[in-house]
Figure 1 (tube, rainbow, N blue to C red):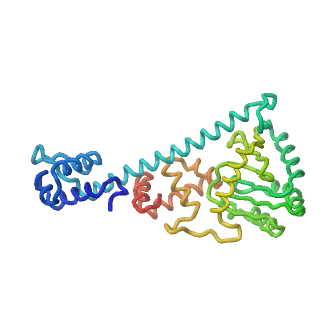
Figure 2 (tube, rainbow, N blue to C red):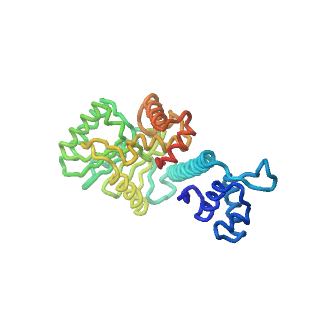
Figure 3 (cartoon, rainbow, N blue to C red):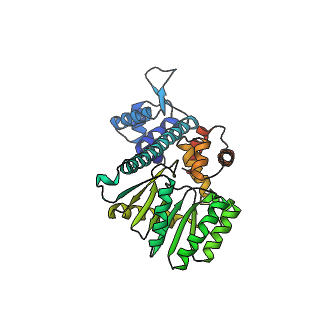
Length: 327
């Protein structure tokens, strides 16, 4: 029953026996459980590693079981730390991937790198995107991790988007969940939907990306400053991976016309993403950027989660979230 917390069945049996019969030694436990003393000692070694037994203060040389209310909190805290470490490894992998993309972007076209075109500055990026929009024949797939759009940006995009859809091009865009709170962005998305554009939302997106006809992808060199430069990728293997990433995110996203629902844990996508980011040690500012919301909104979501968990600190929230199976 406690295998998820690191105890195998035999070790758990020994721990329970020690709680019920604290005066029993190794031989007594072995006789009571029908186990050889070597198996009992092996279980005690594991319990000691997990801090579920400690030396007795009253009887030197004897081990005593730590009470479950303390022991389980220790195991949950250990598991929470392991989850946070795993999340950090995922983030490190993401950073390594971004670094690899940046290294490719630093290569000039004269270097003869196949399938990589480097664009410097906003003017070069916009010119290249305009050419791609003229050349597109079948479909466009977009990750838009910006959150709320300004009315000016939306108005500038209107004729281009309308022209694409009138040519029968299939357009699919994944927005952040936060755009549902922006009236003008919502209105624009609904207008586009009336023309045939498909849109969905997720809590967070890995990167800004545009894929044209599954043959050309444009991604920023720097996720923090997408106007500084971009990479145009046309390699078959790279495009296959990026298209697969888009399809995976699209399949799990919420259609724009649908009401965002809560999962079996009672969490919205934004709350679930916030919980994962909190467990990974991100600040309110970093969480706000990932969700595309204000710093105040990110703090409000985090505070609401802590209140629902009955936690007084973020660490305690992580422990309780792990105990409930929220992570």
